[in-house]
Length: 279
Image (cartoon, rainbow, N blue to C red; front, top):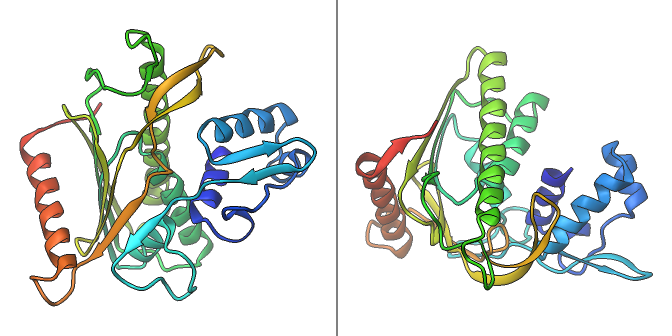
């Protein structure tokens, strides 16, 4: 349920665009086949993340979406460009190649799941190959975020982050492994490596022709820890960060081509020189 709502919120369209309203908790419980307690926990997490704002007597309003600034025009829908749009376009290619540097892989999990569903439903043709390389911060690296404000030695926020990262990487593995087993004409490669580097920016490279990147912006926000405690944490915006989009074109000196080439080279060299394989 949480992943599905994240996907709808990052799409930023229709009912789930800024200013829109979530369905009632009863309607969400019926749609996803879960208890009201589960719905309340998910609503609480989305509220903590800053996506939504429950309003007494009115419902739950969407107050944030993901913003993408692009040098090219929006897609055929005419609406705002989204990460889901870009990953969806990448998955239409016969050979899909995604290179990603991220803190948790939460967004990638959400949108790979959407493409898995489209392939299985026959909405898009299955590619011949899917290759995903993912850079993640090392498990033993003490990150500058998230931390409890006033008590940076408290290990619980980083333990929570590690759990979230593990959950989403495991989910991506399971989704892609399932496709690999069920579709004999599809070859899937998922390679996850760790680097002793705190992500200051998330980076997506699509089929070596498009780039999406944006900073992780520090902020102070409430955080519900695994033991149920609610603390004031210094964390970073992830799925809510502003991203910039570039496209390689026929002019190697254009801004789009230069940015794609530069970040692709950065990723390739980090991958080759600075990483260790993830367990």
